[in-house]
Image: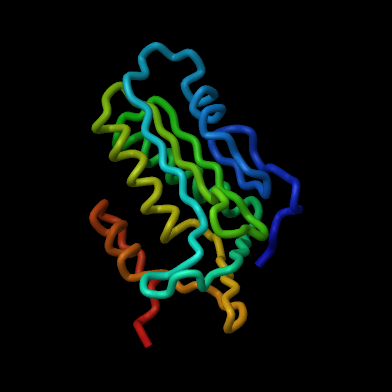
Length: 173
């Protein structure tokens, strides 16, 4: 697994993988670009949690790695699919890599469409894809040490409702 240089943003278009934080307002403005046919913008911002259900305060750090080039291409392909499925006018994904702390923004998915239903569906579709198919690896640090985070069955199920089988989750131990 490779990681990007800590300050490098990759790609200036619809997909950016970067260590730096992002600004939701600036990203929405850039996506809209003055397009007057946009009737709806839906956005999702994911943040790093400090816990798992039933385990408050246990995660002290999260580190993300990816394969540069491959990750962007995979996300671009899924944006193409979302644009086709939901008649979107635009979409943007910003995903952070490197070391992150609880409370940090980790991912942004923002889509524009003529109508709200398409925007909500497109945003949710892209987020479900990112959780299961995008080539990222997450390592959590807890009081017990660092460990790689496995895919969850619930994430695979979320993607399956769009007709895409993932099968990434490992059986529960």
